[in-house]
Image (tube, rainbow, N blue to C red; front, top):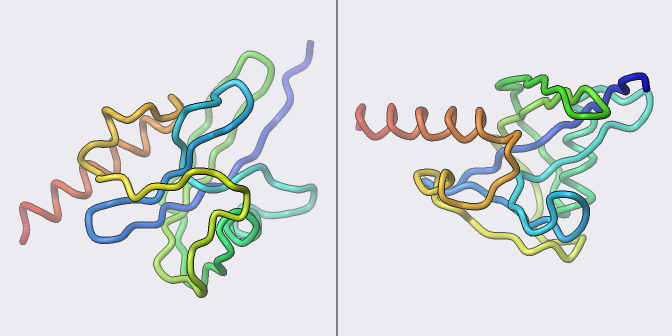
Length: 137
């Protein structure tokens, strides 16, 4: 069976020393926490994807974002390319448009929250960044 490519963009929205996560309600990782975002539509670049997905899921329009990493992960039936964006500013209040449970999770506790395994490098990055900021304050 040929491998398909799945392209996903997620947005990291932080407040103080917490980050916004949502709980999956369906699919293989139902019950796990994840960062907001989703799959790219055809002919959509990763930046357009994260802006669209945040609008659909959270009712916000990201206005200042930067790509901080790209993760490639081989899944059983597809190659996942995960584009990770830091959301610096956005318009509108966050609303759970898809009835997903949201929480502001402490960054230093992400390793004990039931997160989707593909997010481990992101959690490491966030916790290292938090430690560097704490040490320099």
